[in-house]
Image (cartoon, rainbow, N blue to C red; front, side, top):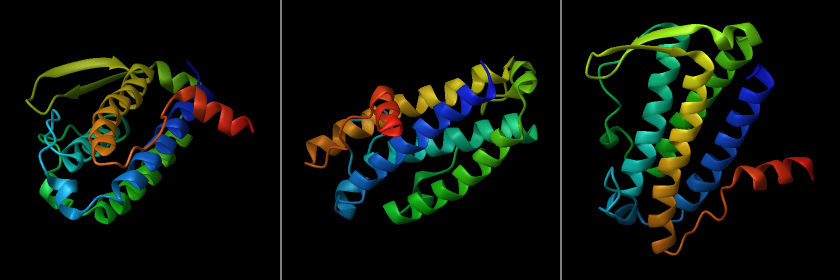
Length: 166
């Protein structure tokens, strides 16, 4: 894994996030927060979990800080607030990723889970996990968005790559 590969994966990640957030912006406020049978309850819950995990992993990897909790979804009352905070997080993550060299991606990162359990993993594994985790929870949100008549459309990596090449 090299820096170029990681940057491509995160470009895809933010492209897919934008598609889901655009669809979520078409929901009513009640639909955004309503229980939708997802693992984190609502569309808001799924998306805040995705953002929160991204924030926590950046703090662990870039700053050596292991937060004890993910953000509370109530701190994100609207899609606009969520989108704005995600844009700020994206800037921080991109700055961090751009600061890395290929050799840094093979370094070990030590961290604690939100429950205080210590682990260590190779950095590129953790970064790929962030993107993969986002894929899982965007898919959950996509199911609920589609049920509300606001499908985000295809979120495939290959579609992103094809659009990028066009």
